[in-house]
Image (tube, rainbow over all chains, first blue to last red; front, side, top):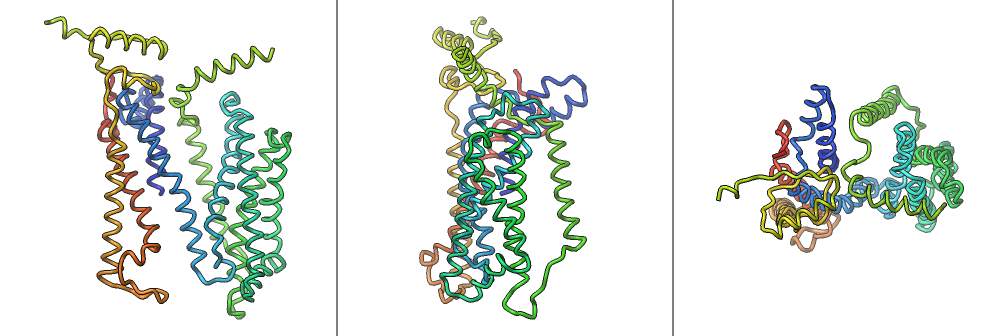
Length: 292
Length: 136
């Protein structure tokens, strides 16, 4: 999966590296981007292969997303741990991944858009459509939470019932209710057009969704493992230094690579943009003319 | 016949004049060796006489290879060499246990198709770190 993503990501970057290599002046920059561009020249044959590869890799990666998240959820669902042993996990994890992915992209994109002044490329319309995806997937996740509760009650299995009762009312109920309010209630605000077309509101709500999805993983793992079959193993959770270190360190590592990328590499696929620049520019001109 | 060896370079500021010029040149029987552009120009392959790329057919063949290899591996491990009785479901024959084998079959197909296709693309276009830009 990771290698697949790397291929897809890098193949898409190569034409832009070629473009940067032809534009930079300093010799070390020419050398660096020359090395990264793999000798891209932009001939018609290469472009036709490039488009075919992009199309097929995009087509393959869509079912791959479903398969990866389903299989990760099977790791939980095939266990016999109460609270994890549920058949709803695969669709629930897939929609949760789309939900948190869109929120994370919005958080980062809105900052980059502001700093690099990309307002005319990433328009309010894009942000609004992303927010609509967030409402849809957030509601699917909400339905999954309620289905879990219903099935736990309906199953008649005491262990299963206790696992969910413990999540919602036990010593870590605060994490469950943070998850519920951040993931299920907060995205519903995007039903208002004023909110889903407001950049400040979108930025705040996207961070709220990120927090909610972090707590979803916390709720699935921590309260469940604190209350297993053997009451003598019951415990509460306090993070160790290593836990906190991994948490802070991975965020820091991601931030470092993200900032390095946005400083030295193109944040928008410019070769792709050039294919639609003229048509969308002209239609925009028409729209402006009609507007006045 | 020495005239046939002459090479003409043309520089265009936009894709429409380029496509027009390509059509006219081809109609008057002049061979177009290559077109370089900063972005993909749709429909240029047919106009300058570049055959449609067969890289998707390669990907299909790599995918089929991945399916076959995964099937062979799982049949050998789970049915032939070391059959296990998992959850009261003995491994009598491959087709009886197929649901359990679907995820690995899918993953292997995608793995082989994507890697094979990407590597074929790199080699066929000779996109190698340190390669000289093909601009002539």
